[in-house]
Image 1 (cartoon, rainbow, N blue to C red):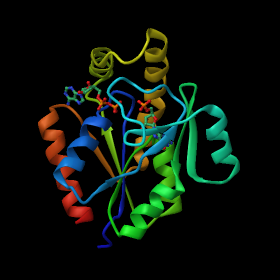
Image 2 (image 1 turned 135 degrees about the vertical axis):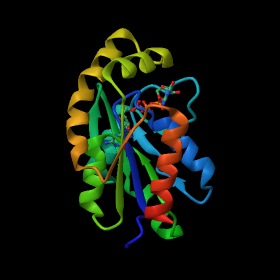
Image 3 (image 1 turned 90 degrees about the vertical axis):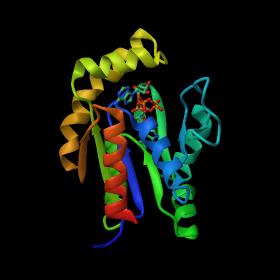
Length: 187
Ligand code: ADP
Ligand code: 5GP
């Protein structure tokens, strides 16, 4: 089987992408993270250039005009996009690259690199649990929370096209399952 070099982790907002991504990066130190560009505000625990490249709307639109993004989306009132230069980094270093991107971005990535891409979707055990986790994270206003939940159904319906769907119920089990998928498909 062809080993996959580009691995996208998608889920509705609050679905566990950040937790799973952090775990995989710790567990497999050779894997590199695709740092996306975004115009959203930095959260207190986030580091510019590590979690995202935090850009102004003008700068982001310049990247679009210069064709420097593989894909981009407008989500929850902000731009998010994958930089060509990030993927080039993985290719140059011959490394596996991990992406924390939304479902549409993940599907575009697969369209660009059909043989090299593995798509993993983290499904919430229920809508109620998703709401609870998002609220507990406490990073969104009531309005932002509503927008994020409204999009969750579309995202879940699009997950049918993913290679692997993992229900993120017990975190420890989820991390183990993602690790296993990683070992089987990428190593
Ligand atoms: P995303 O990056 O997809 O928006 P996060 O990784 O930030 O989601 O997870 C949202 C919140 O839910 C975080 O506070 C995280 O610690 C918590 N969380 C994620 N998965 C689980 C789980 N299986 N059980 C309990 N809490 C979880
Ligand atoms: P957050 O604001 O919670 O960090 O991310 C919001 C959504 O944007 C998440 O679904 C996240 O995966 C997605 N996202 C982050 N970076 C990118 C990207 O480069 N492209 C796309 N399409 N989505 C992204």
